[in-house]
Image 1 (cartoon, rainbow, N blue to C red):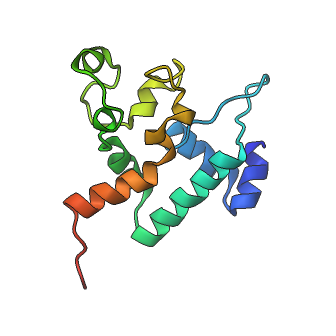
Image 2: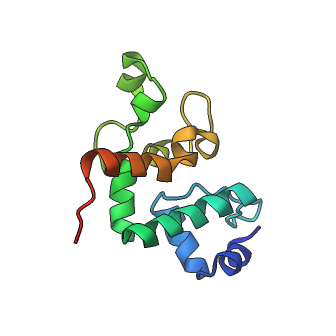
Image 3: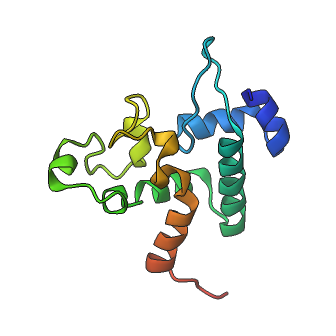
Length: 137
């Protein structure tokens, strides 16, 4: 499905979906003409991400920052050797899939198939539970 069709389904503008891709909140493949395409799984993932953002009152920058904090090395049980050559490094500015999206992923798994990417919202929920306990107003 093209971005314009996906935007209609999600109730957002096409530019919103492009921004998610540009900010590395989505890993959208391109068709032979260079247009971004979304499958049903990516559509559900973006819908879940948007619902989470609204429910938690997060803006785009906050979601990018939180996704960059996901401890992918621990989740994927990467060895010290693997960490030493990982393109992610330790800059903490972007999620791991930002660094591997154009190389086919890491650990021989495409980013769009990786559990860290697919379960981003669940990982962020866990980070918030551990480090940002709920404050009652």
